[in-house]
Length: 131
Image (cartoon, rainbow, N blue to C red; front, top):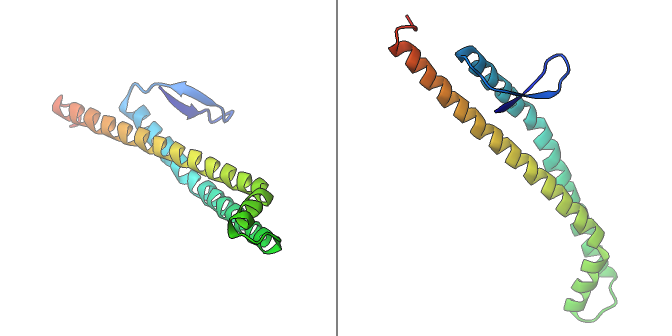
């Protein structure tokens, strides 16, 4: 089954196509979703890289402030001091990866419907309905 947005309410509803016109509608809907995802992914990439830069900066500052004589201990101290920012960075990466996986799933679904559409068109032409 496929989820399609109800135009009146905006909610997602399960829907199974039964005609070439309905398959074409689903193809357009999925294509629109993929297109709408581009600015969202761009925003998520910006958040991810901003979080990474902030974490790297804070970690470097913590290393510079460290009074430890050993580099290993300075790094450990800096890692502990910047741990909350590391968690924010990891969270931003997790959200971005989930969005990328969703986009790939939509692409796979789109390709499936495109193949189904092509097979139905060929079946209609063989049966004489295409003329």
